[in-house]
Amino acid sequence: MVDPNNNQRSIRAVVWLAFGVAMLGAAAMLASGLGNRFGLWDYRFAFALLRVAAWTGAAGALLCLAATVLAWRTNQRRALAALLVGVVAGTVSFGVPWTMGRAARSVPPIHDISTDTVHPPEFVALATVRRASPNGADYPGGAVAEAQRKAYPDILPLALGAHPAAAYRRCLEAARSLGWQIVLADPKAMRVEATDTTRFFGFKDDIVIRVTPLDAASRIDIRSASRVGRSDLGVNAKRIRAFYREMARKG
Image (cartoon, rainbow, N blue to C red):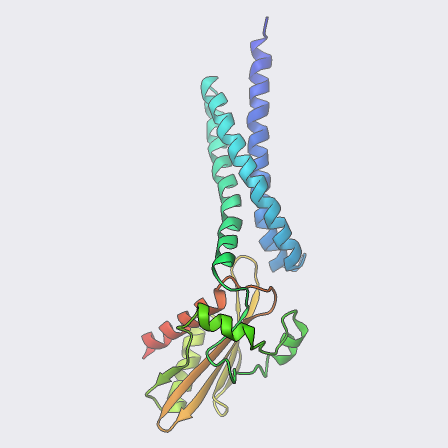
């Protein structure tokens, strides 16, 4: 004869095991980003942990779905809420890395984007920190420039019908409006250097803006480069587009 109490305990154990696996995936996903942001480990370990989070989260979500059937058939109503949370947590834990991987596959594996690929704006104030970073300070050019032209044909210099001094001020205001940390604002050289920090992983990407006089008009060039990682997942191109939109809004 089957003991109903033992059967109930076994089902509860399955429910909480499924919930635990899903939450473990969620914890690993959060830890991957927060650990990198606060310097507990480098981006390589963070990405490895993110892969673990993805598969753990997927397994947890599937287990929670299966356990939901058991909980429903045995009238374990309170367990259903926990299982629903587990399904959501596991799905997110898988979905975030999957989305990042899809983004990486949709763009070329480059991390340095410039509107001028022949004479890209150079880092001055940020040169030291750039040289100390894995990706360095020098623009790679060559194959990277060609890959950029094919993937981002819209990333071009911006021509403004404004005096260079006015164009410089607009660039500085746009950079500040976007929340970038201004490292250098030099009105004489008409250049701005700044750093932008990604939200989840806390990656530091550096930006340099150069204003070139064109008689009474101005040419704006901008370069955005990641300090680490072979691919930027398209973030630097998106940042340059956001800067141009902000420039248009302020114009």
